[in-house]
Image (cartoon, rainbow, N blue to C red; front, side, top):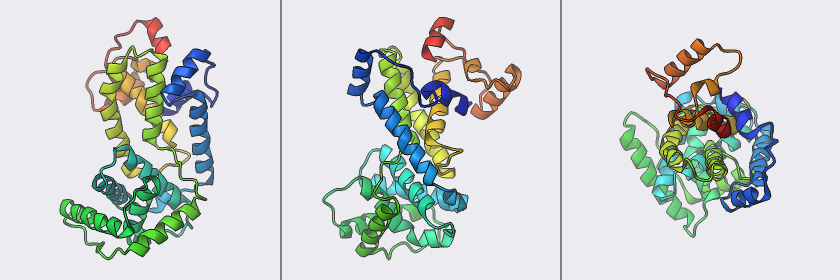
Amino acid sequence: AMQQQENRLVGALEPYPLPEDVEEKLDLAGCSTELLLLHASMESDRLALASDNGQRLSPWVRRLAVFAVAKVVQRLQLTDSATFQGVALLDAWLAARAPETSDSSFIREMPAACVAAVRVLHKTGATKEADVAMWHDAAAAIRAEMPGLRIDWFDLQPHDVRAQEFGLLRSLRWQVNVPSVESWLSMFEGRFGVLMAGEFSRSVIWMREDLRQLAFTMMQWRPASNLHAPRRLAGGLFSIGLLHATLLPAEALRPQHVCHDEWEELFLQSQMMNEVPACTLQPEYVQWVL
């Protein structure tokens, strides 16, 4: 369903031609077709270079890394989107490394890597010493929430952060604008709002927090890959959000090779629901939304 809806939402990178005045509104909203294609191109380039090295980390180590990035973002008082950006950059860095990356080697590097991934994207006047002190706060919070974790993360030094930032930038050839599931969700939400002339803005606002919570949960277990491309995941999440907002019928998301009854059963199981939400729009408006 996610792959089907990805094709419907953004096409095979061939968006529908839009009137000039609409493109101007999209541009003002920061989600122009030109930016959409650039976003897709950056993702394609990044995934073309990426192997599945990130998958070599065990699930608990990956989840720990995502959790650590989130704690760094919280300590720096950045927005939630910074967590998605930081993890996307961390994934790109892991994918660019030699395939022998192991749990043990990454755990040793994790403090400097998590701080560097966020700092590369969000530079401030803070010194590396301040970053180390911030990490110690984050590590203490991680230990408090995960008391069974037996890792000594309190020996991070300023030169470790500095070296890690340089290593990350060099590995990625200074190309740090890595699309994430959250950046794609923002792109889809912005374009939907403009193209629908704000008609369903309340529904989009209602969907926003839930979609990001789902995206964060998925991100904890799966790094970006060709199979799990951020654009594909965001397209599927946004489509399911529209269904929950009663702006699309479940049938609109059904893959052609799956029968109606099987699709409803799969949907209800995946969403832990007893009943499929009923679409409140007339059929002609459903096609408009699609």
